[in-house]
Length: 613
Image 1 (cartoon, rainbow, N blue to C red):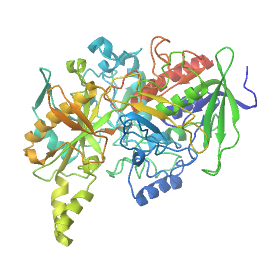
Image 2: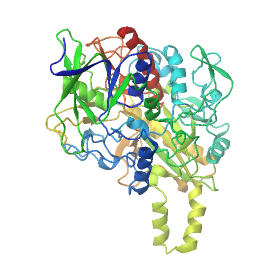
Image 3: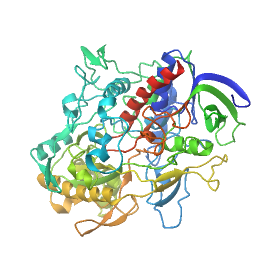
Image 4: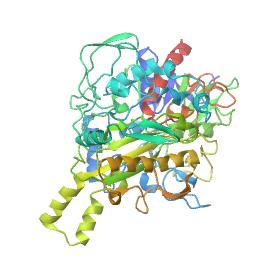
């Protein structure tokens, strides 16, 4: 059966051009399959000139938020951090693209453009630790994945080489993380900053007690998908031998894909494309096999009598904001949704698809990003290099996860960045004191480099009530559904934020920083404040940011009764539909999710090719 009005047929249709969609298109195209990629956003960034236009937009933007380099698109809008307001009980936040129903504001954004959110991500790529895949078995909370770390290790290797990860294997081999024999990362780690070295020296030998058990606090380098120094020699990758690694650019332009220069703009844009984005993977696609169609919004999946998907509608636009062309239906043997955890759920709900389990859109999770900061007694070299080059990883797992969340700790290189948005507040304070001219510059030069900041990516458990829904009450200017988000945090996560305060005090004390120079309460209007009474009996005014790590909305599982997709990310309900990406995660762990999502997707392409054959 085919859908009415069919104009074209492909072996596979992929919705979305972010890292997952780009990797599916590349792998299927390389196997000789014809692939159509539908991207809702504008067709920019694949040439040096168009990418530089993003850099120019960033330079002139008044507000430097994650999407500021990428002009807003009225036909395919994206959520902006400036649109996220404090939730007031009973009053939804209607500003911007996503509708916030609360009780907490979902404080994360994403980008609808060619390349997706990989354009503005930070590029941090740690692997999940083994216990992240078995939270129910190990700690009696949440659910288990239908696969293990061991099942995914080979695909982690492939993903790290595909994305170009710079890391030190010895630094990453902790908390049960292991590597295949003979394997190493494609590039050497990004060097530790001076601030990292100060933090590492201060915390040497320091431990932190949680629920009666001591955990070491050890600073180690971060795995990052940005170009460093390529490793030489022969390295074994997923059973094959690889001869070294060459940093990749996009569109074959030698000016793209340079090594990291330490530009302090990783979020939202790397001016020399040292950081990975899916534009690089898209540039590797065989144009004879892969058709890329941007400014084409997928609006509906057609379902045949036998439950198979028989077509997908999309609507295109030429001039942004001037309306959409009538729907066009295209068909394929295989359909892959790779849009985004939110957009995938939205399209499935709009199509009445893949939801026999009633789990589509549910279990939305993020990493609440909690900050502490302090003023060091000496210059620690703040505001140099990428956003983060090191972290404290030892609290990502432990017996305490039975009662409270784990977290990753980023050691920031950009001073108090999200905490106070320097240097503005410091300048205003000095001007109010009558400090101007050379004296102003001198005092800023003496103070700003002393700023130290810790950022905590806090784990969140899946909850069915945290979800993405759609409603005909909330449509965009083209009459298409806006995502409606319901979001809250459990005590499991709040307690970890209180733990972060205790841990930060211990670290800052070890650095010799007096209590009056330590902070964790953000100024009013930044983040969403919550009054929380912790198990220690004290009341805390807690604020957090969203990390931009949307996961869980079409989770995988071992049974069709409680999950949307199986371990290959294939829909339980539709034999020829795959729904890939971070939305497939049953739990979020503490690791930034993109590397794991790419590894899962590469693994799924094996099942896709087997099915197409």
